[in-house]
Length: 281
Image (cartoon, rainbow, N blue to C red; front, side, top):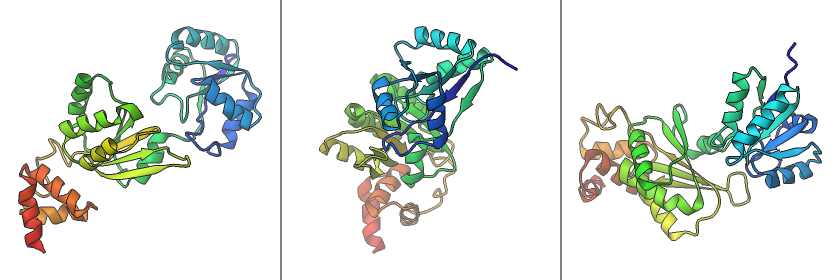
């Protein structure tokens, strides 16, 4: 039997403190040490559930030095609970490095199920869930961000991104410029009092972002490309404009959204599609 300790990956609430499993609560209470990305936020959770285990920080800027310390403790047989800022550790945070190092050293890693913003937002977005691509945060530098969006342009599954409030409008503008005006959904303040989903197309969401007071944390979900190269071998390839417009509306788009999407896909002016929509009446 191994005399090494165990690293427990412990998902914590992304907003509502009730969203935590009984198993995670037990592991946190029994841990020799809780390693948290944000000790202040984790301390509030611990106080709420009367958890008394020792607490230490493990975040982006101390991950190398603190990671070595945690590995040493694990090697001595300690049980360590890894906690992120919110949600599941290892998703868009430095936790994955500690997990990787534990696996390399043969230290047991136990992953507990629980909350994650990716799935919470995706299943309520209304966009396809049978295939999706999680990218997380895009680079802040516009050039690098656009390069990565170019790589995602023909991704056929729903694209899931994380976004901070101060950079949301710029991100939407770059997405619109590179990907075109496709269907998109913003989820904000998930599980909190002011939880909200803003659904539409990138044009509409960009307009909303420019006019609104942006607060909270965001998950941005984008409709995937319709096929390899997006415009090749498409279901509407042999449709006329009216049929194509109707096809987009049957996918759940409003008339306005369908006009914009049909124009984008056919690479024709919106006014041409609008004229056909009036004719259709």
